[in-house]
Length: 318
Image (tube, rainbow, N blue to C red; front, top):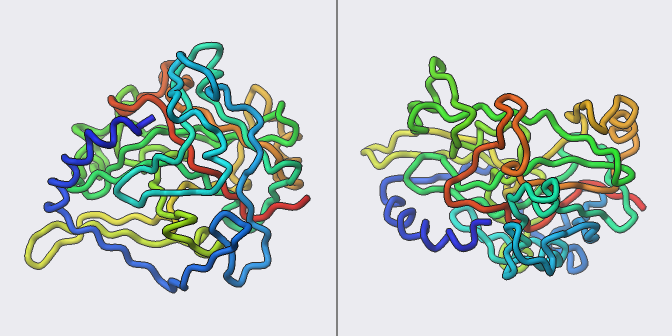
């Protein structure tokens, strides 16, 4: 949970912003449109039925104190009432925060949502987007404040399948030069601020989409843009670039699901890929063991749990 930390970071990032020019190159941008009944999305040319997850199945921090739960951000309806991102450089307060605690098997570090009977289908490209309130560290050419999330999906809320998550580790001092140095081996027990080090995790990307102040079409939300980071030399020099979703958030494709030794057999996985899923589970990565190290995943020093803004599915059927 980074709400309390945003104020501490804001002044430092504001000062550092003078040292970096951040330029977004967006191809084929279309005017945003709204759908009054769809949480601030809609429009475009797609015939797919995009929907936000509107059902709260399990939100253990709701009404609970202790175990890392934050009483000021424990209302799970914040997740289901529409995404209200605060942009690439700051985090929204309109969120539900999950703990990083391992108490009761990570119970309070978990949120389970559904589409109230609807099924999220497998379509070409990304199938859903998870929105969390990560934000960019200005002046660093691409590092971010992140609360990492491990995502899994299920047809019956019992047998869950997830993605092949991998943490690449922190290289050297986590500078741009170290990050790009192919001869350096990442330390998987140390935390990296580079989202590229966290493969198939959510919570890596800021949320630009806001149903009230920055409405976007569903087509645009599932489209990508390139962000370029320049220094302040004359002329400016391109230091780094990356591809993000136009509205932010982290996208997932059911075609990339993987089996595991716990609940995701080949049969379960094939059923989800073929027929879709009804439930999505979001777990704080910090509450889980990294099999590569047999230790909890590392986290940002001033972090204490992800802040969930919503989950948008590309195509939902009754």
